[in-house]
Image 1: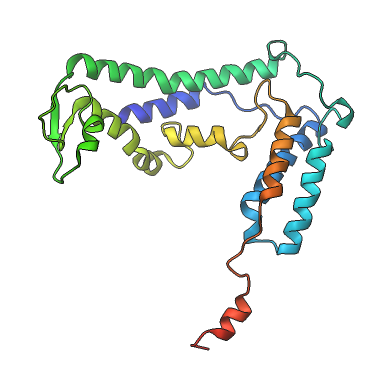
Image 2 (image 1 turned 180 degrees about the vertical axis):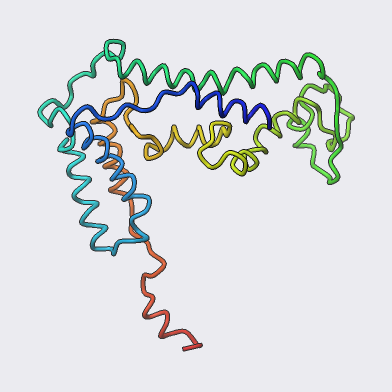
Length: 237
């Protein structure tokens, strides 16, 4: 837990704040992609089906035609500039590298320390039975076939704590903490979690086309659909 807390505050100190958009066109390009992600993820709870379909059709068509590109639709298909020549892109790459280093270096050091001093040790016995399929996961570093599956090796206990302490980190440091691996993975997978959804060297047009495909297959669903008929048909009415 202490290592995760130290990693969280070290990451905050090393990370640089995201650069704001340089002009209104760049701000519109960023927010338009986030608008499509939010419409696909959250609009069903607040919009009617007709409003959802009209917004979906408008955004999907605009994404395909390159309406929201900061350089205009006439520059679609052109290669992206070299990120090494863009100071903003270089700073973004350095920020991502710092975050990966702060995540990997402490884990590598702790795992190497445990593997060097406690290799082959079993440290606890689980109070519930397990099948033989859990043997490789619970007894990493212990090469015995006859040992009960409920015994846990030191290296396996480290990995179990590494992924099992996410709730503790969220409780102590909050939801947006740098100590949680799940938070880091979700922020990479979800563009809406980042201030700038476009990473260094990424083509905005390709991201818009991918989001247009996601919007086309999105369907409106609300728990309030047909609520009047269900209420009238209920036996308690």
